[in-house]
Length: 258
Length: 278
Image (cartoon, rainbow over all chains, first blue to last red; front, side, top):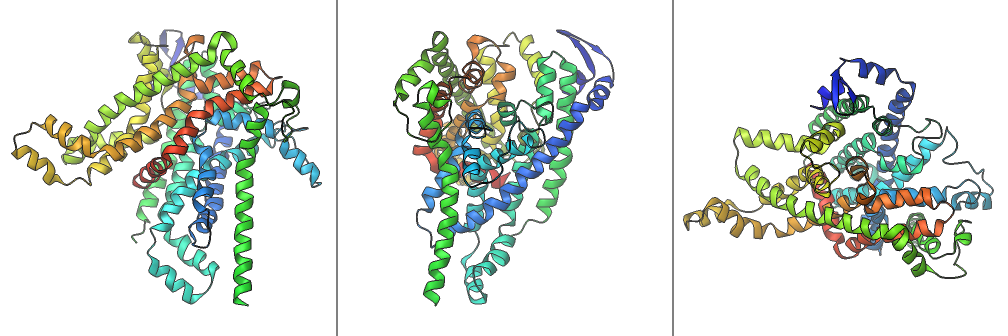
């Protein structure tokens, strides 16, 4: 049904069949191409960094020497539950170029103070950073569950062989592979589909610098181009399935049994 | 030597964790402090204690602003969340039992379609079109139905895995006693599903309450505003009154905070079990 609508032109309530023209318009739009590229960059960055940051943190928190681990896990986990809009508003304030806390701190230590959301070259990455901040909590609990399911014999063996690095590099990284796959898959799909944070923080701006597929789709919808908007939805659907299904198959084929 | 190395390792770990905690705690403290300030002070975005602590006054102002718009939004959000949770649990637990207990083609195809629902992005225009045809567009009921549809695949996933842990002998015993299929469900399986249902209820409550995109597309209109949307519109209206914007952040975050304080275990288990099975 969605596919049929994407082939039509809408004048409020009736639709005229116009073939693939919507796709042509949609795909020849410069704004859209930026959006497409940004969507992929955003998904790759957020899913990558969630793994890179959450796995070591999960390792630290599951190791026995740390007290307060429950408390720390809770603190990192909480942003996941807060409304994305609230997180976006908060960081918009923190990232204010002249008076925001982040730049005040950078000024204090003598580092350069970029205009996080106003600089076209930086806005997308700033939003991605906030997304990573918010999403580490989920990655963390998945990794902790993964690490806790590794049989203790492996850790005993690692203790004989060497120190912490051996344990991390040769036990935890390979044996929590299933958790890693899950985190990548979830945050990649989430990254391709994400909208809330970008819309609250930059609305795709400045200019079209941080436009992603979902924000283009919403703008087309808001402007009344329903066919065009649906064409965008179909493109997004194809993109998500074209990436998610092969990823899932690959991950399933390489899943390990403990 | 060994002791000192161990001490320094613990110190390094603690330092890492301290940095992590700081990065996570400061934004929330900042929200709380700014929400308690006067407009002039809040506009400076400084991280300090307010001169006049007026959190309650600010919250009252936000809640009563624009003809109690905020109360309306909280009410709408509550209705939508409660309504969709009730419908979703009723449907999802039935579907989960059937999908888990049957192993024929129909069940496996239905299961695959449900799983696809986890990944496929929602198609907006066809949904709006359908809701218009049904005469439901811009009603709270339509939002409830949409939320049920969006969230039910996840609910079924978790409940189905849980039904798998209930021994079949229990159903068979009930059938031998002469119970009808519906009776087996209502008297045997449904009560045993409680822990998993609890997990789904809490996870979905937070997700639906915080949903921003859904109401943005499917629930236009001033009277239909929901909690996260107030925040979005306040941000543009109050851009010189950041204390009110952040007071709104506090109001909107109260429900997730309660869920977090009391039900963290269910939330974590909801996320990990859903993630690992999916």
